[in-house]
Length: 175
Figure 1 (cartoon, helix red, strand yellow):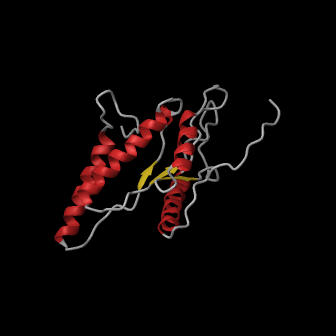
Figure 2: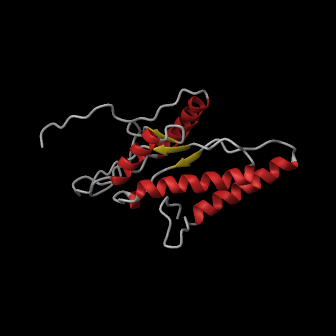
Figure 3: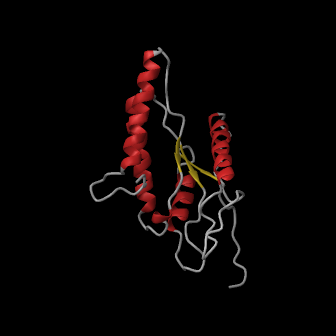
């Protein structure tokens, strides 16, 4: 798996290792053509398994530190690599589970605005999954739009115009 939560041995899983393998292979191809190569961003699409993890914030920060260092060691680039995170609410309705991971992502974006960039996702079309409408999995055309949005956000980031999406205020209404 590609979880931001390492297993008991500190291993992030197959996806982390495959990313580093791909970065190495592209670097080799670039070198063969005498081209420069660097990684512009790390894209993280959050999984539901981590939704209620009380340690997600620390583990996500460590994930960024590890992945950033490993990629920079391969590419030789000096600048830190930002992580683009899709905005999520990972808990099905009516479960009374607090989305710890959503809060962690929000806090990291406020504490490290140059590293953690949260992209909005609420305006995309989601699959309707029985027995509940979870609002978790995007329809295929929305997944493409999320990729386009990531490119737009990254362009703004490198122009110094980036801001994460986060609430400026909150009000409780009703129950």
